[in-house]
Image (cartoon, rainbow over all chains, first blue to last red; front, top):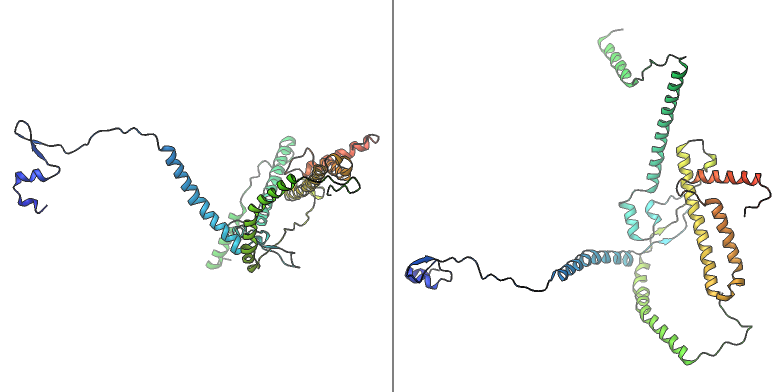
Length: 182
Length: 168
C-alpha cells in the first residue's frame, strides 16, 4: 500500500480492486457499493443423511467402541479373570472377591456399596418403623378404649419431651453449685 | 447317549458327496475358529497365566429362621425369611430348568426312540415340576414366604378333610 500512495489520488482508484468511487456514465463521481455478491441458489441433492451418518459413526465408534474395547481388552488380556477357589477356613472374603471379571472387581471395590451393608441398613429401617408402628397402634387403641369406656382420666395427659426438663435440671444444679445454694 | 445301533444291520456306506460336504463344513468351521483359537491359546492365556494371584469365591448365605419361627408381625424376621425364600426359589427354579433341558436334549437326540429311551428323565422332570408347583405355584415373587406357608397349611387341611382323593 506504500507504493500505491506514490500515485496520484485519482489514479489510485484504478488499481484498487474495490474502489470507493467511480465515474458514472453522466461523468460524475458516484459511490460504488462494494457490498453484496451475485445471488445464486445452488440446487443440489441433500447431503443431510450422509452427514448425519458420518456424525453418528464417529460418535459411537470413536467415543464408544474404541475406548471401551481398549479397556476391556486390557482388563481381560493383561489382568485376566480370577480363579474359582474354596473359601479358606475362618476367612471372610471381601466383597470384591466374589466376582470373576477384573472390571466387576474394580467396580465392587471402588464404586458400589456392599450388598451386606444395604441389607443391614434396610433391616434397621424396618425395625425402627416397626417399633414406631407398634407404639402408634397401641396409643390409638388405648385412646379409643378410654373414649368408649370413660373410666380412666387419661384424656388430660399431654406427651412432653423429657430432655428439656433434664437439661433445665442440670443447669439449675450447676448454678446452685456455682452460686453456693444448698 | 450316541445313536449307535451296533446290534442292528451295518450302517449304509456314505457316498463321496457326503464326505465332501462334511469336509467343506469342517473347513469353514476351522477357517473361523482357527485364528481365534490361535490368538487365545498362544497370546492371551500365557499373559493371563502370569497374573494368577486373584481368586474369587462363591457367596455363602447363612440360614436364618424361616417364616414359621418368626413372631407375629416382626418385620425384620419376615424380611429375612422372605429373602431366604426368594433365594431358595431361585435354586429350585434352576434345578427344574436343568432337568427340563436334559429331557429336551435327550428327546431331540433320540428322535423317534425318545418314548422309551428318555422315560426316566421325563418322569424325573414331571415329579420335580409338580413339586415345584406345589410349593411355589401361584405365589408372589418377593414377599411370598407367608403365602407359601398358608398354602401349605390349607393343602394339609384339605388333604386331611378329603382322605380319599389323591391330589398328585
